[in-house]
Structure formats: structure tokens, C-alpha cells
Length: 170
Image (cartoon, rainbow, N blue to C red; front, top):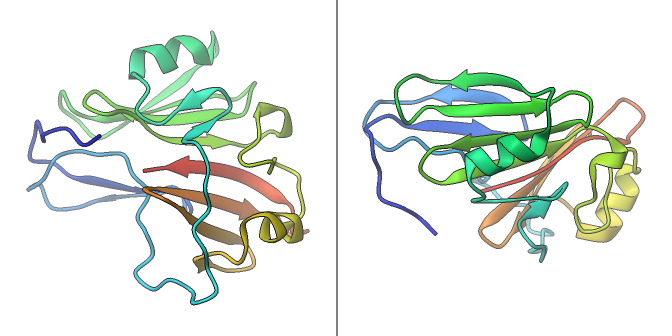
């Protein structure tokens, strides 16, 4: 559910590449994964629930922070009352990117025991990911992006072709 903008700042978080782009200060701050502008003709829509590692998209930031546990590393992704935050627990390998308006916008995992997304876990082979979700809508040998309705699934692969990071975002 989209809520009305509360500020004029706009942040795009491209989780597949884990980079933050600070765009012009004319729209609301949001945490979301940018969809590819060109989608591979062989791509198909993946059907998943917007949850990973026990967290869900749009869950409140305060609830997510509490559930991440005691060893949370917090990084501010901007300034002001509507700034996004990255909340990470290095022990569990779970990171959420969240804001005060929409709550959790991105969920990322880097440990196999953190959880699965549509049966895929960190450590799985690239071939297993493609067998499960089909060819990515965009990507390369080192990363892929799959469309999942209004969400996007991101997968980063290590040098051996295994899942190194798995994420879902809006």
C-alpha cells in the first residue's frame, strides 16, 4: 500500500547492486528496488509472499528493529525525520532497509540459516535459482533480478556461482 509523501526527498535503493542513489529533492523518501528498464524476453513473473527471514515488506520499522535482536548495526541513509535506515544483524546475516512512512522496504540475507525465499537459500547454486524462478528479468553471471508482482527479488552470486545474498523489496 502506498502512503502519501511526507517530505520532498527521494532515495532509490537498488538492492541488487547494494548502492544508494540520492536523487533530486522533489519527491518522498522511499525504500525500494528499482525495476529494470529492459526486461529479458524469457523472464516470467515469480509468485512469492513478500516475506524473508521472518520479516515482511511494510512491517513497521520499530517491530523489525526489535526482532533483529541485540547486535543491530544501524546506518542512516539520509537525513531528516523521514530518513531511511539500514538495520543489520551481522550474527544472523539479516538486513532490513526501512523508513518511518512505509516501514520495511527491503529485506536481505547473507547466511544460509537466515531463511529461504521461494525455496532458495544463500549457498544454493545459480542453476537451482534459475530452475526455480526461470531466467532473471535482468542481470549477469554475478547478480540477477526477478519480478515478483509488485516486488523484486535480487540475488547476488559469488565467484563459484552460489547465492551470496538474497533479497526482496518493493
